[in-house]
Amino acid sequence: MRALKSFRVPSILGEESVVRTPRYYGVLPSGCRSAAIPVLVLRFSLLFASFFLVLGCNSLKDTSLAPGSYAPHLELNTLDGEAVTLEKFRGKIVVLNFLASWCKPCEDEMPSLLQLQSKLGDRVQVVAIGVEDDDSALRKFRDRNLVTFPFLHDRSGRSKQRYRLAGYPETFVLDREGKLMLVPDFDSDGSFALKFVGPRQWDSPQMLQFFSKL
Image (cartoon, rainbow, N blue to C red; front, side, top):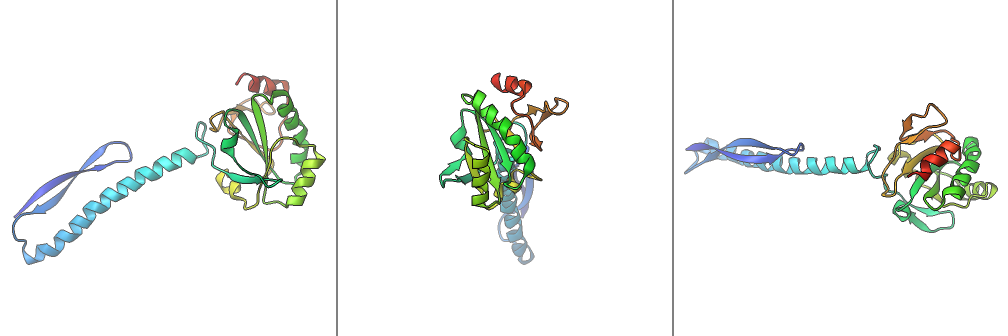
């Protein structure tokens, strides 16, 4: 004898779907006994698949490059060998500047970043990250430009994938909770941008005013 049994499967949209599968009572005919096993397997497969889909979607939401999402996690060393994570800078606005020692525009941009740090250091923290570079070359870059803010080295180049870097310099701004911010691009038309590709005048009057109000 066979009846339909209902069970609920969680949906990634936060709703439940009703799935009906056959349930057998008494002695199964020989041809149905083997069919009952795949039905049970399918039932539990749907449950596990729905669970991992929800888990996966939440994970992607937390690490996507979107305004208001947490900046992708990085654990790097400074040029002096100290291990640092971005969480260390929570409580301040973080200007995350990705660069290369051989990049002339990166060097041209450095004075304005230093001025931003100098004028608004009580609320803003500039962090430089050299990507897939040579330690000695980055130290020369740092010393030549009199960089005083934290200078990290991503030797593995992991940040290229996590932050979808296409060139240097590229800059992101994080709020006090470590979430990605939209910032007006005063060097262009003033429209809001999630990341800045190429050098910017970070100590312009408009940019200083913007940061001072955060």
